[in-house]
Image 1 (tube, rainbow, N blue to C red):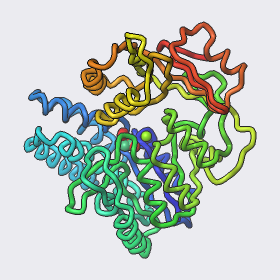
Image 2 (image 1 turned 60 degrees about the horizontal axis):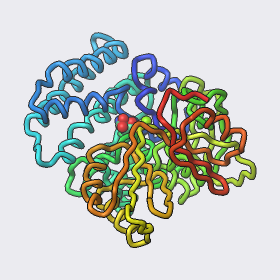
Image 3 (image 1 turned 180 degrees about the vertical axis):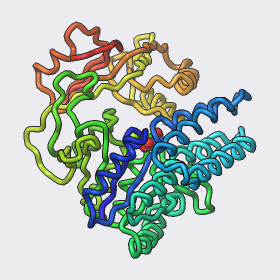
Length: 424
Ligand code: ASP
Ligand code: MG
C-alpha cells in the first residue's frame, strides 16, 4: 500500500488531470490511496467568497467564476452525454450557497472550515468520476469520517488513536474491492461530524496521516518541482536537487520556512519509518527526492527565505539591563497572542525578535508590552536561513544587503535583511 498526494497545481486543468491518470497507470498492481487538494487556486477563491459574504458584499460573480472553472474542466474531461459530473457539481454549489446563507459570523473559524472544505469535496468527486471513466478500479472515502480531530477549527488537532482505528478499518474494507481509493487532503472531522481543516497547505499532512494509519510502504508527493531543491529556484540561481534527505533535515527545513512540504508532515512518517518521495508530476520517470532515515555527513547547504518579516526590539531606557524576568514577560505576551519567534537576540539593554508580519497580532503584543519597554519596529524584511552554511555562500547571499540582525550556530546561519527582489 502506498499513498500519493496530488496538490492543486497537479490537477488544475484537464491536461493536468489526464497526466495524473497517466501517472496512476504506471502502478497497475499497487493499492494506492490518492489524497487530493482543491483544484488550482480554488482554496483562495473560497476564502475570498467567504470574506465577501462576511462583509455583506455580493458573492454572485465569484461563485459563478468558480463554478465555471470547474464546469469547463468537466466539459473537457467528459463526453457531452455524461451528465452526472455536472449534476454533482451543481449539487455541491447549491450546498455551498446554502451554507453561505446560514453562516454564523460569531464563529468565524468553524464557518471558515465549512466553506473552505468545498474545494476538496469538489475535486475528489470530479476525479472519482473521471478515474472511473478511465476504467480504474477506484472508490472514494471521506476524510472527515476518517481523520478525527478536536474542534480547533482551521488548525485542528488529530486524535491519533481514533483516527488510526477508523482509518485502518475503512481502508482495509475498500481495498477488498478497489485497487485505488481517493480521498480529500486538508480535511478532518470532529467526533460529532463537523468538518475541520488541518491548516493551509495541509494536504501533505493528510497524506502522512493516512500513510501512518495503514503503515504504508511509502508516500509520494507529486509536485510542480523536480523534488526538494536547496533553494527556491525563483530566488536562488543554480538551485540543486537533493537526492536524499534525512527526516530530521527535512523537518528542520520546513521549520525555517521551506514551503515545499507542510511542516507537520514529517513527524508521523519518521515515527513509523515510512519513506517520503517528492517527485515531479511533469517528469514522473524521474526519481525526485527521498526523505528517509539516513546519515549524510556533508549535507549540501540549503537556503531558505522567509518573506514578510518584522523585527521588533524591546528596549529599556534607564540603564536597566535586560533580565530573565523581563524576557519572561515578553515570552508570556508572545504566547498569549500565538506569535511564533523566527529568530531572537539580546543585548545588555534590549531584546529583539524576528516574527511574521501579522499586523493584528503584533499590535496586540505591543499594546501589552508598551508600559515596560520602548518598542522599535521594522517591517518589510526577510529572514534568510542557510543550513549547513559555508563562508562563500554567506558572502554571496548578504553582499550589498543592509543587515538588521545576524546570528550563527554551528550549522546554521540566519540574517534579517530588507525585503527586495533578491536573487543570489
Ligand atoms: N487546498 C488547501 C490549500 O490550498 C490544502 C492543500 O492544498 O494542501 O491550502
Ligand atoms: Mg500545496
